[in-house]
Image (cartoon, rainbow, N blue to C red):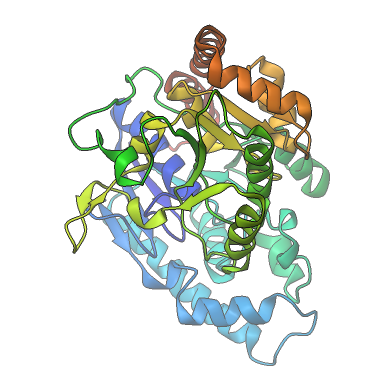
Amino acid sequence: MNVGFVSTRLAGTDGVSLETGKWATIFERLGHKVYYCAGELDPGLPGLSVPEMHFTHPEVQWIHDRAFGSADAVPDLGARITSLASHLRESVQRFVSAFELDLLIVENALAIPMNIPLGLALTEFIVQTHIPTIAHHHDFYWERERFLINCVGDMLDRAFPPDLPGLRHVVINSIAQGELRRRRGIDSAVVPNVFDFDTPAPGVDEFNADLRADLGLDDDDLFILQPTRVVPRKGIELAIELLRRLGQVDGRHPVLVITHQAGDEGLDYLQALQNRAQQVGVDLRHVADRFGTARRLDAQGGKVYVLWDAYVHADFVTYPSRIEGFGNALIETIYFKKPALVNRYPVYAADIGPLGFDFVEIDGAVTDAAVEETRDFLTDPERRRMAVERNFRLGREHFSYQVLREKLGVLLNALPFRR
């Protein structure tokens, strides 16, 4: 078949783009051809770039800013939504026709209303053409407080997500599955985020051998990795508290290294974290400028690493998120066989923790027991080895590409393809 992925953005390292790439890999391994359509595409992806699909497009932003935060609609809001939706429907038609698509996979654009006209356009297109479609939902609008006050409730009911014959819904956790059924009466399949556990993890090589020194860590420092964006829901203040209470570990100095960007929700949170770390004597390094989507040298000749290089060198991973749709960084931690602290965010408590993983677990606060467990992981090689090997086996069993392949097979068999 010819399979087309549609989203607002399919570029970079956000969760939607990463999971789209994994799904595409499986489809290609099954012998299908894959194409992409979004407001931004990673270089080299075959398909169609439509600037108005991106949530940062000026017209899309204008609509978004007036649709949410107030229950009163400005006079021309509806007309501008309708106009842009018509244009985007034509763009989707052009994409489907140009690549003779047999199957459409909508990545989050029918779940979270970052681009309202795109959701409406896709809904109308599916209704009119009956093209077999899988809607892959990563997070719903009712999960985000900023979308709850709005003047477009009828549009949200119509398209986020739509309940249409021939449209199959996929969510990434059981909580979302239950809420979708409760709120909209829509059934869905749970397909968790996955990782390629059958491909050996990269290790120390010529490029990353000096990463620790390049980040200013001494040989005997403990590299504590926080591999997430700097936004409040990541709970990074809990990682700071862990290091404060941990102190020196057999004479080794722990350093909290944050690899991802701040700024998605402003810089106040980063500043608060830096202030807190300084107050309590925790060595915090925000080094997002040293990490990118590909290895390279910057304008000054310094190395820009990829996230995998950080995992290779990390002694321990902190993942104290309060809310996650699933937990990509946690699956990466399992793959790289690193011990970790996890805050029992709802999806972890529902779908991941019960599988038997061996992490340091907390429930919203760092405890004495969590500090001592962390110390054990850092000082007892056998304790660490047993935990990471167990976690890897469970990860491969529940979150591997083979699991994704089987679940996609079930979905494809249920779709009403035209014979």
